[in-house]
Image 1 (spheres, rainbow, N blue to C red):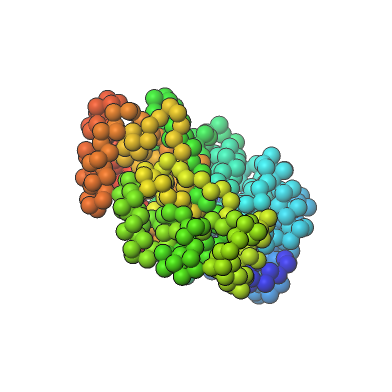
Image 2: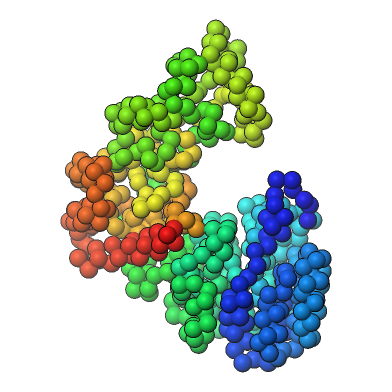
Length: 535
């Protein structure tokens, strides 16, 4: 693997070692009394799984360990596991060239981004995807190709047990993998944890336990434990018979944190088409990519210091600057008084600056700071000219805490890529659209469509926002003043939803109270799970 100057050694090799409690549990599930397995560990590192196999006194036919780093491979050899062969090689290459097939593949694959692969590794990974009938993406992480490749190396009946980032449940680049696993395996179990297993890297992980048995059923189950130590108390027989049917159309596996009746409830609305997606009423796109927000977004003091009034446009750049469901000019003025970054600098061509000495001085200052050498600035015709200068009807905050906000942009402010721009389509009206969003069903879908991070943050990209179910009705606009007031006064969102659910879901759509309680319970379950992870 080629060394990248800016990357740490751990980042390059993707090495974060598995706690013994996790390795022990995966082996317990995988063996399940079987004594004649051929086993592969495709990224054995310093041999945690091999050590646990030895300590557990397991019997098997053979063990093959693959490890790219020579020093780590030597550590694995030093364990002295019987009937084990350790190969110092790249798993991708091994996967493409090997005819060997296995009953069991286990491990904690490396978390390495595509850009840290050398050219040969990229080609091998692409070949693995091709063999599986999948399209390879440059966004793909190494753990994805490890899971696909390991699956291809299984015998007719076989198992995989992996420690993976929780991204597998949510991120777009793993969607082809989710579709592949759903079709390839007959039983899938996902074990997640309330507490971080790798707290020093803020990486939420899950255990992916898959089995194929040539049946026609495709079932999945999710189980959440407090931490890795709770695995010792878990009866592996609970994982023998997953109950939930896999939805091959589901974009994300966040669904499976829910009970089957909750899944059925949500699928009913998706399949019946009674409620449209937000994308039917509005186009959502990323905010302005400046290339350097600290340089191009500034407080009023900087505008005055360099006499930049001619080039400074109103800006809202952070969620804390948006106190409600309507961002007003008064809000913007208050932010400006607070010395927030309330101005976007929109410079023209250098030749058009004419006598603007302050602007020239500020741009020269940016070049001293080497702002112009950053990728986004460097590829422009002239680096100081920010592209895509469009103001949107509304804003949708990209990263959220308690709940994601949809906000009317009454102040006509520009926004950076910390928020998405929402442009209303001709078939909708901005006040009705915004008010229609604030209900339990839409908030539940925001949790399902987005992805959570280790600190409890919910992030939604534009295409994910557009997939949120939105019960649009023109008369919902009547709710907007009360929504705006309650959000502005920081009232508990549950109090607001009692009011909005009645009109949006019950009066307009005929939801029963039981339906409303179901939608609200789903939202609370998913958001509480995410927020607890941030504590």
